[in-house]
Length: 381
Ligand SMILES: Nc1ncnc2c1ncn2[C@@H]1O[C@H](COP(=O)(O)OP(=O)(O)O)[C@@H](O)[C@H]1O
Ligand SMILES: [Mg+2]
Image (cartoon, rainbow, N blue to C red; front, side, top):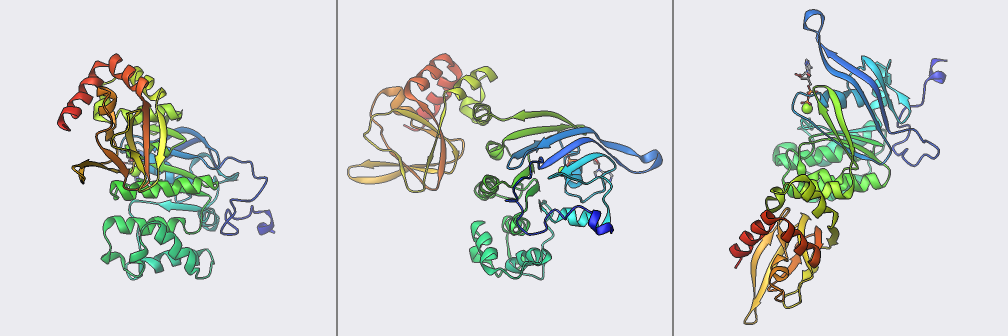
């Protein structure tokens, strides 16, 4: 009888994201408090938290160390018992759940934690297979190999954790968390152990999943990945302080504020420049600008990298390799001379762009920007 009254487990099948007619928010947090310790030592670490996350959103949570981010994440994931308040995951209340019910609730959630606890005796492949087996999915070789390849571990399938680098182990943990295609992904500093490229790759993968309706809540201090967020939430002293809907232009300004040439601008000036910026994506190997062409745009690399190539006396030289936060294309706009080099995307590369007239207006209006760009310009001569 009890069983009939119980709500169905969150992940009755391994892929419930396409279930129609479920209009509940992915996560709904109301009045959540949390305490550690007992008696005299009882210490409140979360205070009256409210947050709603819709299906398919990617929400990034930032905040100082010790502010309560991990505690909130573990409550949402059913790894801790909720003491006060309400947390609903796709409509299912966690308050009052314990033991097997909490375990059932956890099954629809993919956790990516820094301390990943891979099983040392098992290979990368076997570690991921374990996660599938826990969901009663039979050994699905294609799916396991597919996700490990997607995370650039195709050449490490049969390596044990001890034979892998820290970044590789972290990616195995990501594969293990995501192979069941959870409806909700909770990630605590998922890119902390990763270099820029693989960190970006993991985040791009989360973005692909979000396009399929999968929801992510990511705790991070990594400014390089803020641009995937639909929203940024800030936790301070146990309270969610701000909950910002991220517009393209705000994201751009945030990105610019980390780029030395733009960092001197005040927030209004940054917002103004950001408002004029476009966004262009170039597949690996494509030519972004060509030596000899007239200059029409300024480019700033948001993700990926490029090679700057110059042909002199019929011989092509590589002048520079540029990455995230670097810019190019300013010279022809400043001098009105043709492009003096060709720029080719080394990998899929995302750029922010400014048209010539907007670029000129920006450097005329903001002396510090002009100064910074000129500095780079002369360094590159
Ligand atoms: N298991 C625990 N027992 C007692 N206090 C804890 C425990 N876990 C975390 N805390 C305390 O709760 C507060 C919030 O910690 P945490 O959620 O880990 O913050 P964050 O993830 O933002 O760094 C901190 O003051 C921390 O010391
Ligand atoms: Mg933490």
